[in-house]
Image (tube, rainbow, N blue to C red; front, side, top):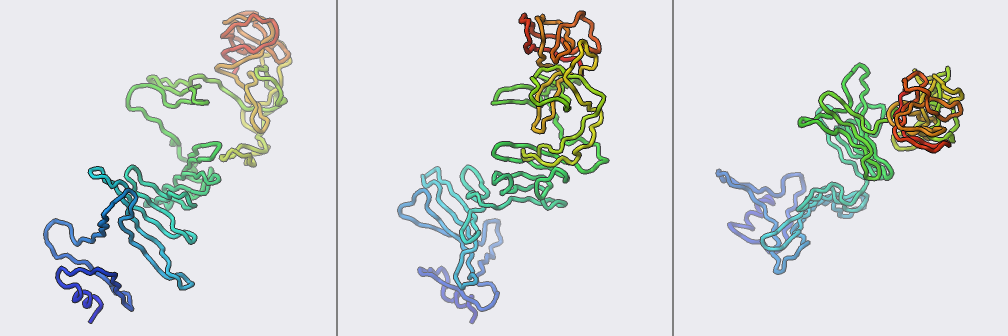
Length: 373
């Protein structure tokens, strides 16, 4: 007689077994089948795991389904389990939890926790990735758990974060976060990012520093506004200790790419275009000619590679020698500072216009709107 038949004879109609029962086979046949022949729409067959406690309490384990096997030392090991818990035992507000755990490196780790208010993947924070496949992509969506020193990277269509591969990623490093979208199809003219408002005009992007709004990109009708705008040109040719607001002029030489550049992780990396000339980017010098018509702008900042960012259009601060009034036009003073232009006609030598006057006759930074770029 088969083991299943023996169990059926043992149970009988409505029989109850009060002790542990083991069904053993020496092959791969099914040990237990629950079958319902009911033809209605109700649920069946049913398998109940019931914990009938006299003093139920929050956190009670209400059942475990364990998957067990011998390891190579002959020890019985739980390779995975489904755990049910009573999260809230209060009458009327009952809540449950369901956990799926697997063995990782010799210990049980939660993989999916279904809680009353959330569903959590990788609750214990072990180094396991989360990945979703699409019909065409193995890594349509992936969370690389170990990337960025364990802070993780969210990848779209990529196996690892790669600025040269099709797809994109969102990096979540401790001291930085950034988004990169890459399209390797050189013949594809589609944009990489789209911002589409279906309602009224307004702000599309807002830029903040220390939680304070510093600028934005907004749309009104067919006009795009860059608020707090300052147009910068990267260049080289002057010392990195040159004061902010110093007037610079172009020279007859093209700038070149630095040997290093900032990587996506915020560190320095080798530039793939190191030493190559940059089309239309002129080198600069501190302006040394009064009324210089080759003015390019004013020093705004220097990057990590010592390149100067020259502010040439929009708002900026200019080092001015002598008193000035709002509305005055400025030109080079021939010593790296600016001076008030003798007339109010915008010329090739005009740097910009004073927006806030200053009666100090020495050298000082003056707020201006720049015209020279």
